[in-house]
Image (tube, rainbow, N blue to C red; front, side):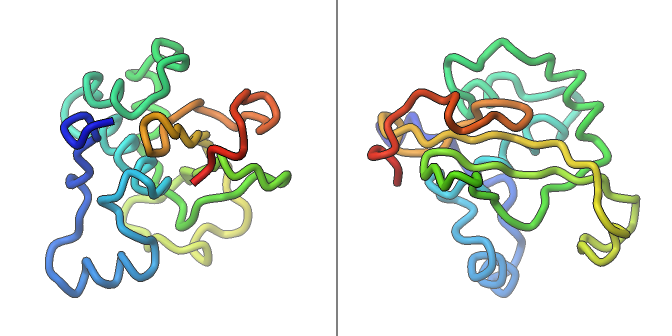
Length: 158
């Protein structure tokens, strides 16, 4: 994939050098499409920001085989009161080509910490899949998908 075809991951960069360095240290480079959290945050932003989901940009972020499977307006309603969880989950079988990102319910004006969630929270799951031909993670499913059902070679993982 050429640089012109890569998604522009600049929407969620925090303001100020201190904020950027703190986020980079904790979550990696959120401008790097090889960071699954960056892709998940961009997907979330494209769904919930603005007056409507940014369908053109969402198509760049999704795998071709998953495109057209979701109603982004319904997804927007589901995700409107959620925030991205603080980390990317590796599947139990350790598949290096699959990652899960949770979106948890967030009360308005509540701090974004697990301590404030009051125990287990019902999460929406985004399944990402590493695509070597694109040299980046892409959204494969809205919901958890058993890693063994994604037919790609693990040796192509980052």
